[in-house]
Length: 113
Image (tube, rainbow, N blue to C red; front, side, top):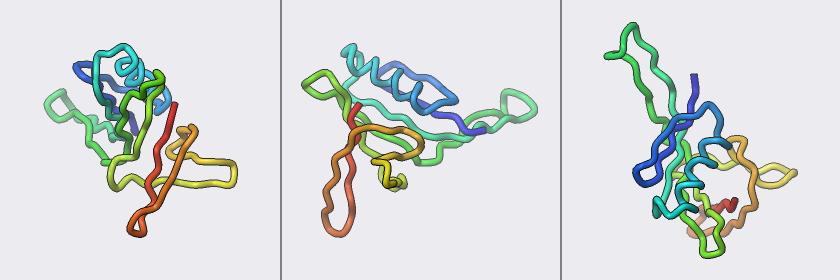
């Protein structure tokens, strides 16, 4: 089972939906409880008892920072795939406004919510 782990300051949580995980992390940023946030896809490892259960982080996810205008900017974690479609920018089911630029042959994307 895939889940989304989020961390923002002392706030932490688990969601089965990327949008809800990002919303929870964004609320901590907008409320001033954190300077940055991280949302990462993880696999639930369910064992026979609590000692063998846990989460395996995949390295796919987002880092966020609050903007001066009260919004939040999201940047993919290093190594996270970013998908582009004819319908606009979209990655891991998380649509948002995006700006992109390239440097040294790599494309950098900033998501804003």
